[in-house]
Amino acid sequence: MTTPTKLGYRMPAEWEPHEATWLSWPHDLETWPKELAQVEDAYLDIIARIHEGEKVHVLVENQSAQDYVSKKLKQRSFVKNVFLHQVETDSPWIRDYGPIFLLSEIASVASLPRNDVIASIRRLGWRKAKQSRKLACSTWRFNAWGHKYKSFEKDNLIPEKIAGFTKAKQFPVDMVLESGSIDVNGLGSCLATEQCLLNPNRNPSLGRNEIEQYLAAFLGIRHMIWLHGGIAGDDTDGHVDEVARFVGPKSIVYASPEDSSNENFDTLQKNLKCLCDARNQKGDCLELIPLPMPRKIQAGKMELPASYANFYIANQSVLVPIFDDSNDTKALGILKDLFPNRNVVGIKAIPLIYGQGTVHCITQQEPLHEA
Image (cartoon, rainbow, N blue to C red; front, side, top):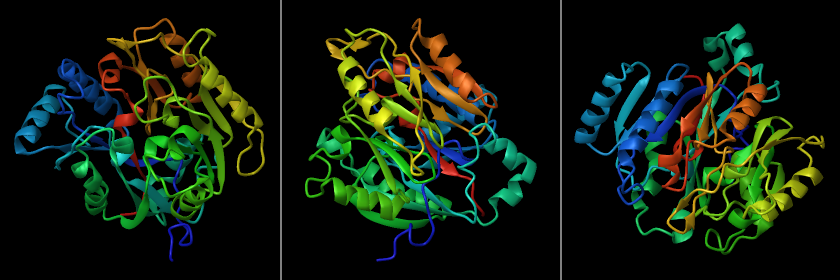
């Protein structure tokens, strides 16, 4: 079988140059029964920050929704670099059901220091940088996080539709995988939690070795860093983008509660031990940077998965969920130190978190590529 890895494709790191970011405009009152208007404002804030440095593609339900979103964009005075596509969805979580984009190129820029990637591309010139960067995508199956929700048929069709818009070569994969369940450094290393990827509600016939083989064949992963699990309130069964993220070839930020009475303390301590024992694909020790946790946020008696680790790295900015919490400033400061050449900005995420996800969950990057 010809796989993308055999053809020289790999999944790029998020800090590598983007062609665009994809979002699905929120419309589901089941997800946000009271917060939808505030969630729309958060989406507009996110689009405003991202469109300054790359294209933004937004999926909308129909012509009525397109007219509505266009009006919202014009009210904010930004329409340049924003493109609307009429595609029906079940949910807004495009990180999980969208395609995972791949690149094939002569030389990777992922190995550059995280602060030098965009600067180096600018020196080279975006047009030259795009040359020999061929786009493809792996399209995985989506089952609504282990069949937790009934409606996901529309979401399951999105990868193929976006591949059509981008003219990306498609590699269908007969395995359930959500992009929020993995995080990569673009050079072959991948973070994931056992709680999610090994959960029998995803791929009951596949064990650890088989899952690693799929990731190797279709994403170019040759080294796994397995963590224990995710945080309380996460209905995805422990997505890694709430607990640990690559911010460089051998640098990882990890969620670290300061209070041992925090419900997540034991799980996150187990994750930290995994990280301390781990190496990257070259055998290098990892640089580990703790991120604080916000206070507990609840919907009734249910804890919500609020985490600063759910940030998104765009071309010119890093968008960080904030929660009107005393640790907001601390988390922003840590990420500003890590990304001095990008604008690190807070996105008011309390309305979003009532849907059990925030900034990273609603975005999906498309890497810079040749036309």
